[in-house]
Image (cartoon, rainbow, N blue to C red; front, side):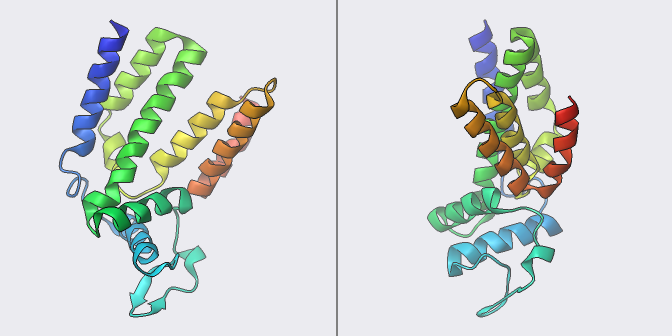
Length: 188
């Protein structure tokens, strides 16, 4: 029963995740900047936004709100599949699956089977999850790394602690605002 429900939920995630991928959601400012940086990286090998032939934004720290854990896979996808929005958003759909899997596994570990299936079902049918998750933005990838870090957080095993720190660091590197969650997690 659980496996069938999991299969149905992930099939629904697959359908909604890939449905009209290049067109839905509509592209807007932040996604355009991130996709432009990934395109510059794929075409020219420069981690910045191209503004003219052979001219790039020098002050990119004021430009980027999403970093290499998202932009490097997007650049690789653009390099492999060509410069188009399907290729740019493909790694983000993979992050949707990774996030859903991490949410399920963490909820199952902490709260049990029923809570894990409920968590996954709520995530899969929550449509803003796709609006923010399919665009070239860092919220869902950052949350995936955060959940993966929490999943591996175990003070008894040094390797789990290492992977936890690595995942939490990638979460902060993806979107710096995840650094604000550190004090909250320590209190929790």
